Image (tube, rainbow, N blue to C red; front, side, top):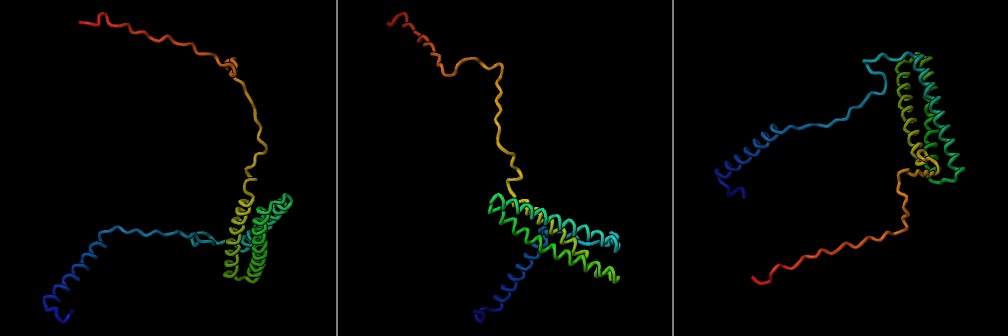
Length: 199
């Protein structure tokens, strides 16, 4: 095919290719393209914020472990209530969340121990890392607590047995609705004939 094409054919092909690339470049410059992005918040102390002292890190880590233990204890109590009520669906859901909670509780306790060791040795880099991991695990406990609350489901919104309270309006009519009052017949209108049927 290309052997039969002469010099004019090659020139025409080059012109078409050049026009196509110029058209593409102009089209790219004319469009307003936007890029969506997700902002990621840093977990630890940022450069703008002052880093916590080792004593403050240890105190915050201890509070995180106490909160995590309380969260697991609350989930365990909810699981016992579900088993007592013989609610299999709620018990299965809570059992899963409690297993995750207990595993993360052991992890956060290990991280607290590692943090205290790093603080004792004066290893700032390792203590900052362990403190950041403890912060992430604390957020995980909050999500697990929310998921456990969702396992409970409608029990959170249960208001008890419905009570009906009747109030009678003083100005309500006194008629008995069972008695049907007959509607009087209306007279059929009578149109008289014209005065004369012949003109």
